[in-house]
Each structure stands twice: as C-alpha cells, then as structure tokens.
Amino acid sequence: MPTVYVETYGCQMNVSDSELMLGKLAAAGYSPVEQPDGADVILVNTCAIRDHAEQRVIGRLGELKRHMKSDTVMGVTGCMAQRLGPQLLEKARHVSLVVGPDGYRALPQLVEGARRGERAIETSFDLEEHYEDFTPRRFDKVKAWIPVQRGCDYRCTYCIVPTTRGAERSRRLEEVVRETREVVASGMSEVVLLGQTVNSYTDGTHDFADLLRAVGTVPGIRRVRYTSPHPNDFSDRVIAAMAEVPTVCEHVHLPMQSGSSRMLKRMLRRYTREGYLDCVERIRRAIPGVSLTTDIIVGFPGETDEEFEETLSAVREVGFADAYTFIFSPRDGTPATRMPAELTVPAAVASERLQRLVETVRTMSRQRNMGLLGTRHEVLVEREAKRGEAMLMTRTRDFKTVLVPGDSAMLGQYLTVELTGTTGSTFTGAVVRERQPLPMAG
Image (cartoon, rainbow, N blue to C red; front, side, top):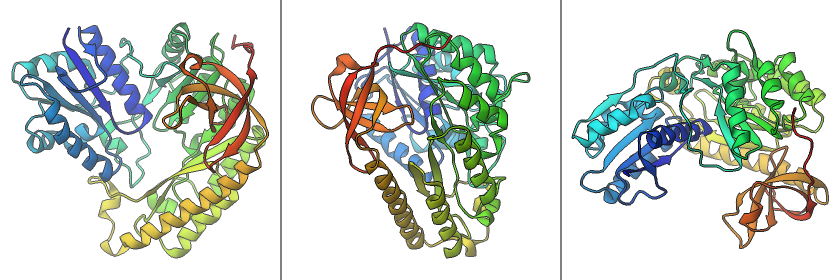
C-alpha cells in the first residue's frame, strides 16, 4: 500500500482536520505512517494565525525535502494553504498540492494527479461541507476532538480565520451525537467539541445548550469539554447546561484578549471589559470552583501603557488558572494592518509587556496551586510524560496537569490522585486508589 505522512501545526481544529485527511486517504488505500522518511505522500497541515507559525512551516517544508523519494507527493493543507494559495507553489517548487480546509474531499484525486506530475490548488469555500461521511483516523486513543462548527462570523480586526476558514456554519446535532456514540464504541469516554466560536453553535433548531445536553448524556461519556467559546455567546441557557450536565467539565477557556474596553473596541471583540467580567461572574455563580483560562494579546496597535495596565488588573481580578499570551502579529488582509503606522507598538515595548503579563499570570497561578497541595482529584491518564521515567501525564476535570508514576498500561484509566507538589504550572501527584467506574451518562 502507498504510505501517507501528515504533520500538523496550529490549533485543535487542525488536529481534527488532519484526522479527517488521514481517514479519507486510508479509505482510498493509503497506509498512515508516523515518520516522513520515504513516504509516498507528505502533507503539512498548517496554521496562519501568526507570522511565526507560517515562517516555521516554510522552514519545515525545506527540511522535509530531504525525506522525499523521487516520486513523493508533497502537499500543504490548512489555513496557510488557503491564505497563500499559488504563492506556496512558487516558494517551494517541490510542493505539488495546496489544499484549503474545505478541499479535503478531493484529496485522493488530487494526490493521484500529483503522482502523474500535475500541480494543483484547491482553495474554494464550501459552506455545506462538514465531512460527515469521513471516518477520522484519530491520533489520540484517550479523548476525541469533534468539530461541531466551521468558520467564523465575528471578524475581529486582528484575526485571519474568517479569511482562511470562511463563514460560520454548524453541523446538525444528530450528526454530532452519532459521532460521539462512535467515539464511545471505540473505547474513549472524553470528547472535546470544537468551533471557532463554539458556543454560538446553532443548526437552525438547536443551540449550544441543546448540544451540551445531548452529547453529555450519550451513554458511556464521562467528560465533555469544548473550545473555544466567545464571551458574547454565554447565554443563560448555555451556562445552565454547563452547570446541570454532570459530564461537562468544570473548565472554561474564555478568550479575553485585552482588559481595556478601548482596546476591545479597536479589536472589534464586541464586548467591554465590564461585559467580560460579568460573563465570568455568571459562570462562576452557576459553577462554583470552575477553572478559567484565557488568551491575551499585547502590543495591539494603539495600546497605551494605561490600557496594558487595565489588562493586568483584569488578570488579577479574574484570577485565571493559566493564560496563553501573545505579541500582536499583523496578518495581511485583516483590518488591523490598515491602522495608522503611528499606532504601532515598538517591539521592545511589546516584549516587555509580554514578560510582565506572563509573570503576573504565573505568580497568581503558583500561589493558587500551592494552596491545592494535599487535595484529591479525579484524573484521566492521557499519555506518557515526555520528561521523567515511568511517569504519566494526567488531567483533572478542571484541566490541571498532574504527573503521576505509572506505565503505558494505565493509559485511558481514571484515577484518584493526591497533589504532592507543583512547579507553579503543573502538579505531581500520588495515586490514592484506582477510581471505581462512575455511573456514566444515560
């Protein structure tokens, strides 16, 4: 059988798309392999959210050239493919295929054409495409990524996603439930629902609250997560579903981006600082002990020292468990690149702000985590730890990472652990006992 190697960059949606591509090519007779050396097809599934991600891929394409045979087909897929299109064929002559997120249905035909020497670009949008008939070849054997929505309608001024993934559209609820049942049948009990603004989900009849209740009560499901929501779409119905469905985990990744209302308006985030803090309060009132993580950008055009201080004060007020922090990266085609040049924040200033923000988040996280030592939690064993012999990486329901001793035979098990130490961001733990199976949904 011909072989295919897929390398993935970017968000969980890209991981899910890679699983779909592998599944489609496997159904067409290709055998997935874990290394690029000598593969008949090499696909690099890309991210375009920041310039650094694109430059990394360009460099990687050059590195992968040495793994190719004379007849290997090299393709670039995903958001960077959608954004750059023919430029990729010009920059990398050994690339034969450029395929955007809505073009994966044609992959087998495009690959066969490339094996005959044809170079091709497929970057048209298909607002009806959800790949419902694809059987994904999943990388993870413990949890499953399930896309429920594609595209985005919010058009934040810094974001390239509407350009690379098109308009927002949602899958039918019954299709998501069908896939969830298949996940359970394969032996997994945790699902992560994916969308660019996942809590704005609607199939015309059902909203995100309905989806959480339907997925969360599939027999065999023990944990339901989702990413990434938008603060504007946390209706009372959605928050009630989170609070009332036992399988929905007590963790929300709630992108803030800035703690300044003026900056949020410039970013076109469509909420104010006060609106964001009100959303946090409503979630915490309904779900005591919920863990909140976030995304924050520094150095956005026009950000003043005072506006950055507002972000720091919001971080302190919310008390995030963790934050993914970034320096603003201009993306061609987004409104932010058309802002006056005098609004540009100097790189040195942006770097200093990022350092202060990271230290603020880490200090608060470290203090909170120290107070949790000695407490007990249910964890799911996700994989072997990258560092440390005979150590496993596990995850609590509220998304804390806990390293515990063990071996690969324990993957996928639920354990009770006592937190014994912390680096400030992750924990070490001791297994108290293997947790007895809990009553599952349904």
